[in-house]
Image (cartoon, rainbow, N blue to C red):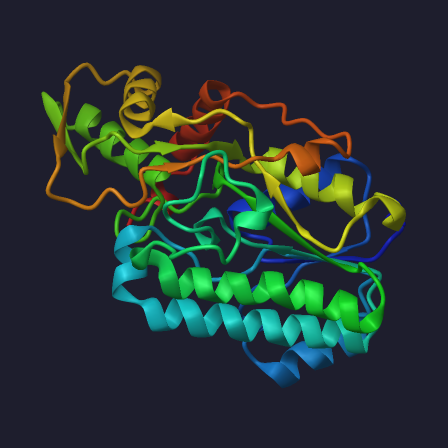
Length: 318
């Protein structure tokens, strides 16, 4: 079981989720934490990963590293999204097994589910229909990771490999690059820049009608530490959805962000641009039944994210 002295490796520790995991671990008294930058450890390098696990021998692994991005990035670099994520997952999984880790958490994405799935989306809907074309390469890589967790558990008779599927994560250390960011961080930047440039309107992609469920990065981090600490008897060999159970239209999100940012102009929608799937709301009842609940409301989380963005403006704007 995970305890305060356990040796913990957080892969992707500078990113959105990884940094939140580090913050939660430190705040909860875990001190034996390993973190390596990309320049120190390239997770797509099989030998480097093997050497790292052989030397450090982590007991618990949070695999929050990977290549991710929004609609534009997914449409532009599908091969990169597929190959990089497949290589990272394969390398880390093999070394985790070889050096006998106690538990590993892999993170999927809600885009793995069929684009026309019934709402809210249950775990068993995986592979039951066609996925969204704009993210199919990334989704395929994530699906392979989910299946790999089950395969390792089945073959080696242990539920050491845990797959979590959070819905749209946001928070401090998010990517605010307009070419590669997800919707919430992109909206924060666009609306903030419209305000500081004195614009009377901001034009946003799509119709604004699709609905999305957002979960604060620190809630996902807390959920990760929670399940990492559970007795194995409570964990099933399945993937677990993690969400808040509440979704918002992109229009509602944009209006909320405008209020937090203080933008007084109009919001216009460029309906010729792609919306993606119309709704993605997860059924997280399996995970919640284990005894976990999210803590941060969307409005509070957006305020915290915007505050972080303002404090780190020089580093986040490209």
